[in-house]
Image (tube, rainbow, N blue to C red; front, side, top):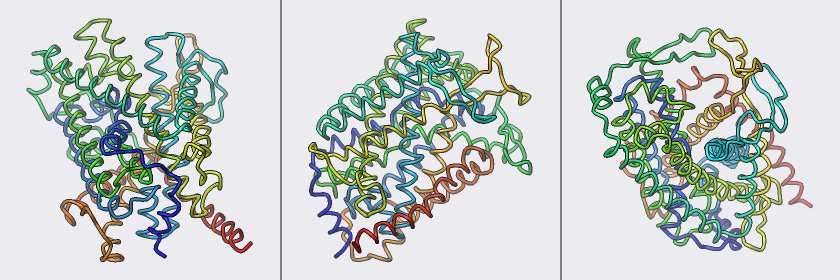
Length: 515
């Protein structure tokens, strides 16, 4: 019996509630979080010019859309719950599927949920000042030279948000999709309004002249400091190689902001006519968000000089843009928009992840409880397990250091702490890129292994476009491994740690079958 037939039998408990619009809302809603409103500041500091800032988002957009169009072939061929886990299992072996699911559980999904939840709480703090990163319920407890654990009001709000969305999604896919559709529609309209405000009401002749009069020359950039002693530090503006490295490192923020589009594949067991609707939703959702992201950055650049983008307080570029137009009210307007955006984004992330754990459990490769559906036909235990791990990832804090490498102090002379946001981006992105490369390579493998399989949709531009994606993603991954070592290698090591876990689970499953 083929794995596809087995998969169909296993998914009989799911309810097919998601149409094309719902699926597209999951794609777009999981992509649009807080990143588009924040990460352009860091990208601008890395690349140092308006042209390279826009180029970074264009490259990210091309990579995202290209990958989504390639995934369409796999989604149409294997419309099973678990999505990418199933593709890797069928293309290579159960080990590779498990390693992806292991990474989804330990790094990708909970890490993204935690990062978005912190962004939600950060902007809710603009509206409610008692929500602050340094208003302690449990003061920081140093656990190493680089990290501490704490519980601030900001962290508490982030955890409450995760728990609330988890509870909502245990009540069934219908209420989950209602929240997703409502919040995705609202934040898409809000992002369109932000763009219109910047392009028309915010048009600043000085900013346009400064940014576009010298479009490509990097200025006021920050150096990319490697963690390996034998790798040279580089800074955009110091040659082609330096610009290339800075450009690749800058992709972390834009790629994270554009990630999670593949989550719709996890819910294939709940999508109506998945052979058609999943590929279409991948294309529509990624094209929509990529276009909005590029236009948003264009709006920033016609409103603010690049120096103000680079130096935006707390990296809140969108807030700085609205403050230019509306004065002090701009911060409140933007905070409301981002609170809505991050809430909807995290709903999509919370909803989709447990479908991967479900597929793994059905193969005997994860906790047995995650492979059961509750009376609302959703994997509730998987949702709860994910909730606890994502909530824990909110607790670590980074110990900040000054330019000389000494521990930084706040205004009161106490140690200064940051959140784990940027580290989580690095942990997530390197693992995501590696599995995207493997999955798209799986198209070539499956064309050879299963040439007779039904493919309602074939990867656009095959084989040239998928190969170009693989080469580009591999290049960015290599640069990140060399220049962001402390936060990328741990992600890779976490994936490799799944190998002995896989064999242990296989032995346990074999004993259970024998009994």
